[in-house]
Amino acid sequence: MTLREMSAEYRRSAALLSARLRELRQMEKRTHEPDELFLIQRRKAVLTVMLGEMNELAELTLHYYERGYTRNEKYKL
Image (cartoon, rainbow, N blue to C red; front, side, top):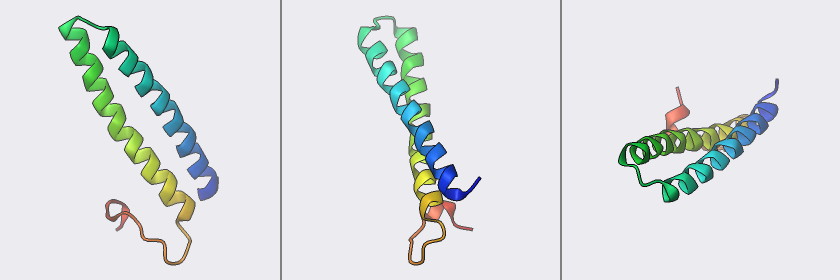
């Protein structure tokens, strides 16, 4: 698998995470149970972090070999 193909996979995964976050937001609006609301909010927090990382990795793998591309400090050695 090339880095460009990997980038596309990260983008597809990010789209799935975005869809799930939309579902959770809808569930959150309909939920009145405090325990269930807490679990939904926790899940949203975790998925939001994952979504950010997916987008960062998609960008990194897409431009990895380009000269002058400034990488996110988090992914530098």
